[in-house]
Amino acid sequence: MTLESPALPQSRHLATAIPGPRSTELHREREAHVSSGFGVTIPVFVNRAEGGILEDVDGNRLVDLASGIAVTSVGAANKHVQAQVAAQMERFTHTCFMVTEYDSFTKVAAWLNARVPGDFEKRTALFSTGAEAVENAIKIARSATGRERVLVFDDAYHGRSLLTMAMTAKENPYKLNFGPFPGGVFRAPTAGRLWNRRGDTDAAVTALRGVEALLQDHGPETFAAMVIEPIQGEGGFLVPAPGFLSGLREIADRHGIVLVIDEIQAGMGRTGKLFASEYEAVAGDLTLTAKALGGGLPLSAVTGRAELMNAVHTGGLGGTYAGNPVACAAALGVFEAFEDGTLLANALQIEAAARAVLEPLLAEVDTVVDVRGRGAMLAVEFADPETFAPRADVAAAVAAACHAQGVLVLVCGTHGNVIRLLPPLVIGADLLRDGLAVLRAAIVSATNPGTGVEPHTAVATDPDGALAAAH
Ligand SMILES: *Cc1c(COP(=O)(O)O)cnc(C)c1O
Image (cartoon, rainbow, N blue to C red; front, side):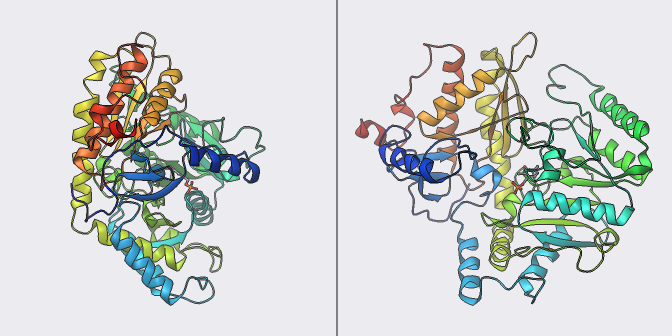
């Protein structure tokens, strides 16, 4: 794995407890000014970030296994992104693409049109956030089909706007007290979690039968779109049962429904291919990207069949900041970073390194019931070994132990019982190994209290020995 001469040392370092005194002070200030409607994974304020490291305001260096939720895949200080953004900042920050044009918008569209799965002529529309891409895909599908309804799936996550909340499955925190939601959204089954552990070889067939039954109940000719994530992200890093996505493709074709593939979390190289749907050899009629697309700047895209994308009346799509020039420049930097194939190879190396550490836990720790994912999008699920009842308490304890030791992991899953790993694709091999060792120890100790490492005693896994000096 390569990293261009990082200025920030690529090693974990605990100078203080996590969070440190300066972060604690800033967090107190935040509480006086910022809506408490925003949660936070760890109340740590970041000073710098680069490669696989987040350095906080107390001088701690955390191992980043989150990438700001799958956004900084090329690193939070990528040289290509920085150069493109700096050059654009010199020229202008904004014109509004609906007022006067700039070529970087076209270049981003052309890059996506050439690489998004689907052997057909494509067009792209750019927006700012993932939720906006989802909303616009529904606008396009409705306009093109003259139909209204939208089919979504169990465990889906599509965003926090009113329509995308309706499309998202999980109630708390995303939807609680925020209704009523737009109508016309119907939820169908998937193979769900643990179909592989249950040895359910009919998982895809059963789920597809459920999808077809739901469509028949409501009239398939009333559905404009079905929207699916190629690996469900917030829902728990659920890899579709083999044949499920291709089955959806067949159902969509048979009923004239627009298949929308939401690659917002799984796409842009995260899984070791540019798009996770490539693993299933399925092409959406519309494919959505965001998160890693803008390399940390807000940019999202709907890419798909030219006849759908051009079915909307002129002026019907847009947004003041849609495809902002600085965000487009950042995306061009992201594309450069992916050019030589190293980052895709890194994603697969990250998977191999993580599986080597995590898969043995399936036999060693009884509440570890699944290790799954693709490339640098991997998860560990915790549940009762007999009943598979979710163990959110274990996931929370593991996350807390990792955070105390300076390793940033995220929890996900409809039941909150999954630890997910989304490291930047530029993370160094040694740093990744260190982060995984901390995660492994946290999982062992959360399950067998007293046998694992205690918080703040991970001297042996601190590769530069700085932790010992700090205590
Ligand atoms: C994050 C996410 C979204 C929403 O993106 P925002 O930029 O937060 O609006 C939509 N779909 C999926 C699969 C996501 O992971």
